[in-house]
Image (tube, rainbow, N blue to C red):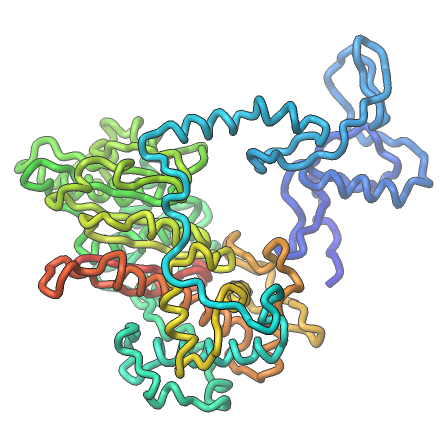
Length: 599
């Protein structure tokens, strides 16, 4: 598609983002070199595009300085219009060539000059931070890496090459994915089958190619029930709302400004909690609703005085955990006559620092409450564990009540990207006092076979009569995970050449899009090529969503059979594990929720 013209009076970066189908919204950097009235202006991230433009238009020599680029600071310091010169001690001299800017080898989030790498690694702030983290009691290098299960096998014909580059093998994998998905999620009883219920001799395992081709995208999406409890938490209705009654769009009154008659929205606005906008607020509210529906909101402390514990994995600013902990505090506050000093412990696990954290909201919450409040932040004690989930020993990092079954412990996560979900689940192994685990998954294209906890499940599914594949390993998983990105395309279609085109203004609802994984583009057959070749009615979007759900199903099986497996058949600590859509896909296409709680 051709690049649209700049919006009227556009004063931002002129770089066009083809994936988002809009121009970059960053402010451009000021430069003294203007060779044309129509010269584009770019932000720091797209500064290289200006160099390319200048190289193509080097024959132009007129120097023009627009009005908005004039320096209003009346300094007597001389200025230079040459990018290769600098001012020092009042004199203009040629700049020293320091090479191009490259990501820091210690912390790729910032850039340095190539010539300064050796000196920078000695003083990089990230080195000191890592040394501080490595000195913590809970730090254990790579303790949660490695996933769970066997690694499968590579194609014996070409062990050093991808076994899925051949289109014929991609076709077989697509049919296998649909056959396995149909058996698990589209069974005759309408419920999701567990691994021990699957039988390769069932009729569903012998679906013909024509029957697989006729499976529609709607059937694949509707295979999971959609239970949006956000309106229940808002107090708008007293029963579980239907999906059609819970649509929240940005053009509705009050949506863009965060105004709503809901009690949770009112409480969040009162405490000035940065929930991330109406869509994220809707998701947090529904997650909170499922935590409450599963009986994980404590109404009182344990008999031995242990406080309830809320743990948020990959917390970021920690707003999801803050809302769940605040709601638990409100529940305890309603029972204040029986417990005069109720408290809730909130632990946030996040590897990097961030602004606007939950801790700030808790520190300023004193005195801002009433009996009617659905959030009691003044009753929350927060602790932040700044460490990568791959290296944190949760048994050591979290307080002593993890070793006590008398207190209620709940683990939550919202959009813990890719392999982060698998690492978070593995970090919980060996902890037998968890009462519930609620995780919203996303970015399945960033998963890793090495870290995936459902490897045994996949090997049993695909290397059986049901799956019909002779081998399954990292190569097949890499293709399957790459196909998941097609599920987040909104109203898209594929041209004859197999490239994506779209007429929708907003390609995705959120910044969770992982189709063009670095280093993998062009290595594997396109999902749209395979769908067109096989004539699948579900399209790339349906097949991609089926891949997503199978990855999540493997995680559910890990929770059911390994992470939260009972010690014996008579053990009363059995967990009820499930998966559902917690909001509609109009709110976010990444709308799957993994749930596990004690029966």
